Image (tube, rainbow, N blue to C red; front, top):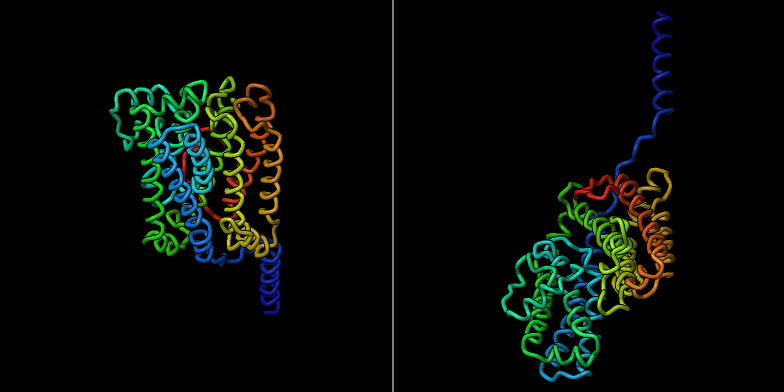
Length: 366
């Protein structure tokens, strides 16, 4: 009998040791996703859309002033308000969820390079429908970039062209289209969609957190890293494609638009309130919470450090990315490399820690 008891105790001891020496049991994730969604909606997304809609309204007003009384002065004011609205768009472009997704806001607002030949055809014929997907590369801010800066060699010649009825009408149509889309998306966010977004706080693939984090990464990887830097510098082609830069015709705003986009991306990761130093629940806090919960390294530190490394690399670039690609493309490639490092940290490590699956198709192998 003593032998049986002894064997039982020995087996129990072995099992206890095996349990304590094995992999640590992962503690339940109780991070407040609802609070994070509230912070995103009320302090980042909606204020960003409000600022964007306001900037678009200013652009619309200056467009009306220009078409009513064309002059170099009103042209300059329109160009300035175009830039302000284009810059404000960089803060909302990543939020392709809900209302923005339903109207394909990013595609209808910022596909570049714009198709100058198609624009000229529409101007000449007066026959176009800007709601059609086939016209996305002849509208939005890149199309305005062409009209306001690229239709002739001098400002005086551009003024003559834009003063004509055909160009003036198309110019107004482009601005009206941007205003319609921006107003619609903002109205839905300030209506019922805000509550729909915040209440969907689960952890399924269709939950707001999982969907928006995927949208955030997709934007960073495809629009910011690839679109603004990788494609023009030739990362995905046999030669550089300098004519694929953002702000091609205005020439001097590529870097400013990129920085506005990168800063908005960083601020979202940190949960920073729009145009404020205050912060709320965020991906940074979520990763820090998981680090403390499971006694692991804080991934958010590495991600933020890499954001800063990318900013440092971009600071070395010329304001005109077309000129940068043509004169010293190696600096563009260096900036791309720094941006790419955070794709790995977020797409692999962050998604694994947050237990979120990638929901989009990766075509370039990153």
